[in-house]
Image (cartoon, rainbow, N blue to C red; front, top):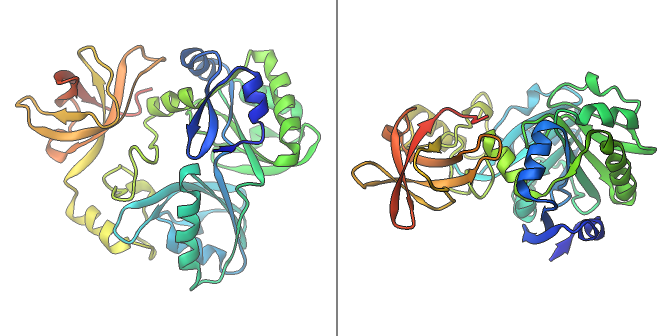
Length: 359
């Protein structure tokens, strides 16, 4: 089991540590609901240093990225970030990821921790024809997600970089808390605003301590993976291993908007077929009408008791006070307002397909 650089800090704070993607990670500190509501209303800090960072450089960097990702990275300008997918040869998803453009010959790919080795091997395989320079620096960086509506204000006290000049899904590299080089990214996985901060391991504790001290002004909470999941689910953000996997088409997952057929990419013909000919199932959001908490893997049924799909994520929403979920259902059962049933402990519990995001 790997440990993040600041593992000793999390243990010292009394965090509940759990195995996740090969790392020992904090799942909660004071409790999921407290941390969740702090991020929605004020601010929270997550240590998500388990994520992977690949740098792609050289004159053929963009050509490689264009071929291995589904989105159109040629549209990126310097300092911009793009959400994308790594499709496989069968039209499924190797991973979802962020693509950062520094300049025409330098990019950063941020990938999910559980897929670092798989993604690296997949990209390296195709790089044999492009010859870009790849560097896996996943073990050299820490990543702190400082999220919430009050995050920007107190982070601004730590840097001369004008944070209000960094639009959503853009980044700057600048000094913060006396550390010369921090990647300051207006991104996040909560839908609550804030920034993600990438810092070299040697400076990680200094940055963490400075952010935590500044965050006292807004009663920032330490936040773990538990509320990271409930926050992203309220915004209906896909999570790899739940809504996405090696057999899930981005079209099924509602990610046609990051799938651009104006270029060639791995698995294009199959995925284009999904778009042209339609798919048999779709990802939908639903809320529970009767009492019950949906969980990944639970069967979804129609009124007649026929199995029509499966839950991919579900929780009791701390913000909404009701149970919500995401799941794949047959297309004919995917319309808003459709009554569906979740099988919970051999009982059919009523739910309804609703519009996402939930919040």
